[in-house]
Amino acid sequence: MISCDLTKNFIIAAKRFQNRIAIKSKIYDRWEQFTYNELHKKVRALAFFLSSIGVKRSDKVAIILENRLEWPVIFFAISYAGAIAVPIAPGTPHKDISLILTNSESRFIFIPEENRVLHAFLKTLGSIEEIITAPFENFQDAPEFFKPVTAEPDDLAVLLYTSGTTQEPKGVMLTHKNLCANFNSINKLKLFSPMDSILAILPFFHSYSLMTTLIMPVFSGIKVVYAPPDWPEKLTEYMKEARVSILIGVPQIFSMMHGRMMKKMKELPNFLKPFVKLLARRAFGPRFRFFVSGGAKLDKNITDDFLKLGLKILEGYGLTETSPVVSMNPLKSPRPGSCGKPVPDVQADVINKNREGIGEIVVKGPNVMKGYYKDEAKTRSSFKDGWLLTGDLGHIDSDGYIYITGRSKEVIVLSSGKNIYPEEIEKHYSKASFIKEMCVIGVARQKGASKIEYLHAIIAPKEASLEDFKEGEARDVIKKELEELGKELPGYKHIMGFTVIKDNLPRTVLGKIKRYEIEKKFFPIILEEEKRKESILSEGERILAESDIGKKVIFCIKEALDISTPIKLSDSIELDLGADSLGVIELASSIEKCFGVELDEDMLQRGVSTVRDLILKVKEVLENKTGEKHE
Image (cartoon, rainbow, N blue to C red; front, side, top):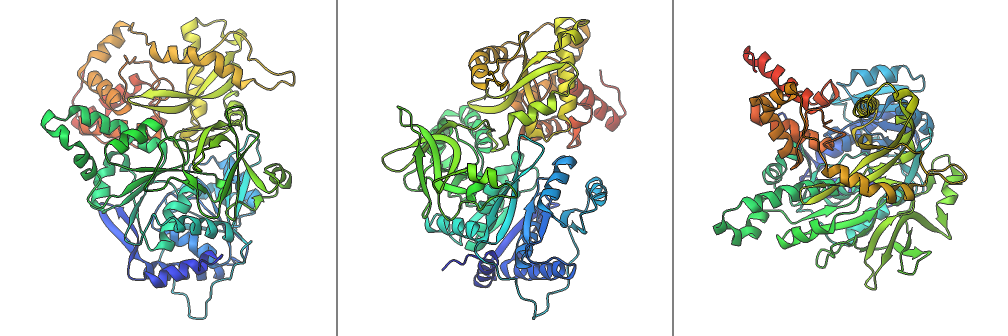
């Protein structure tokens, strides 16, 4: 029987699987791990420490950490002490951190020891009582008399903040019952067993990964393996090395894998092509079983191609507000293009259907949130007759499979699973001195055999401010401003392409931007811009591009970012070439392999924004390494 108390379920799992490995992570080329018994001991010790510094029942404790061995210890220790976890994404701008901490009334916070800037910032906030850094020293074992705080089903377990279109953050309240019920629903599917090993590559501060790569596996006795930061380059290597059986990811990851696999298949010699299924399965190790995709809609072509290779992707659907899993494709009968059937104990329906039977997806079940923190009006407007309004459009077929066809809310869901609120992005970038108004839309950019959705801006400039510039120069001025403002935002919120228009943006009588009209009008123009590349170079650019280093760098860019069209030296690596965070990692790795040099992880944030900058940066690093001048 599953309890409605996270801590009780954790203790039951820790005692049942005490000698099994719970958490495993590769640190400095060496695997480190905790058994369930060791994890339980560390959780009790940290919970006792939290109690000793004044953490009480229902206190909010923030976590700003990347995935690491301490994360599950911290999460379950917070619950053990009766407190409420407030996960925050590392890299969140300080002003947003301040808003979240203020809104949630968090008085205690966990941060990485090495982040001195964040530590100094938090010191300026008078509301924070204790800053605890990780990796922390081993805390004293909790005495026998120390017992966990018993949680009631409706007690809050987690406050997860989602981006909003205003300055006020929106906190989703998930209770112990919500999270335990969602685990119970997943558990009833019998997809997973204690013999499995899950590779955790998604950050725990998202509800999807928190449930599927932390709570669910720990409660099930499954080993969780943390992938090092270089996992995009060494994914299959780590899966084989750690004997992983299940990989849980988002469409962006499977798109990356799909592109690589399709490329390798084309390069296979003819005598190996009959064995392509066997080779594909062996690539992920002998214990591999299946993939799980969620967080955003998966391209049906990717699912189809994986299935043809004998690789199953089980696509699911959910929201932060639903703890998060609503539906999952069955292992024995997955349907490409569908996000599966509702999980046990969860109901889904469609309201306000059009002639094609498409309407808004609504959800009901014990996994549905308690509401939005300190926002009763928003909570009330999100429900109708007891059903949660998801804002997603779709239909349910006669067999109960859900198909998502679009979004009724003005939210852009990137292929990485990130939710983007256009008004928030527009407000930030409109600070540019040359921009009069702008509209941000999601555009699918072709990348090899797959499509990657990115943010594209339609910009109406202040013509008076650009009078002294020629047309090409004006675009460069706007591009430079966008790049500078982008440095203040997380990478997934960067504008990666833009179109300049002369007219004002179409608006309603009330002054709201007509997004649908803009998308309909400008999509063909944007797609044409994607195809068109200028090929005229100045003499200086031609010499740099045709130098040995220039040719190699451009080759690395084309390989890493899967680009077949011509590349200009003035192309912005983000705005023109569409390099997202994964693309940047792959590009850096490709250059390191090609030139045998190490590049700083944040190279694109420190003066390297264009192809020209990157060539010159590689030239500088090589000269510093060898002491020789490179032409």
